[in-house]
Length: 210
Image (cartoon, rainbow, N blue to C red; front, side):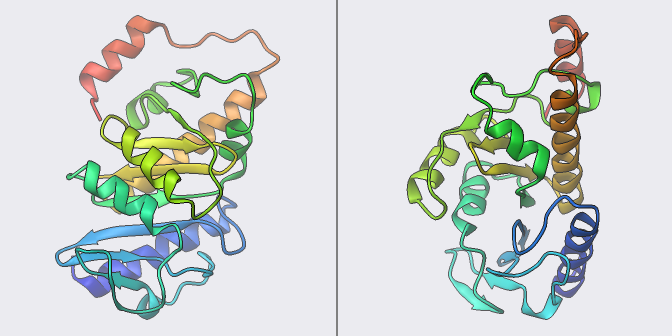
């Protein structure tokens, strides 16, 4: 895919998520690996109204080459790319249900959401909770980097998910699956629930390893 087509695809996918309420205001950001660096959504921009020509282009060192100033959370994206060489795209949202789960006091920080559906296990697997740090704090990048080698998706405490994928489509779909599972989890918290068994989870992981 050419760089211009990638820019158009970022804008299209971002608008789709915005219109479906997965992100709002100027929150959320997307990046895609290209041949000579990365494309990232600009800081302060709305994912519902991105101008493809103004999307930030960074070189392999993370320096701005063209376009507007990149998202101030670019370090989260770079951490994923550097720790996961096969990553083709990263999505970070402040999606409502995922953020709500990230604020709960009684979740397992090693694996935040239970295996409610097969598709969650297939697309996310194990979801660790990254401790809270203020936005822009480089300790947040360090914490994400420490987990990124083993996990393609993490949940930032009181903040939201960061999800890496082999392609933009892959990263977006996984992020959407995470958000829907978070919604289901909140709906089911007061109900006796039948989760997938460890054996069922193991079979799915063997067949659909991330």
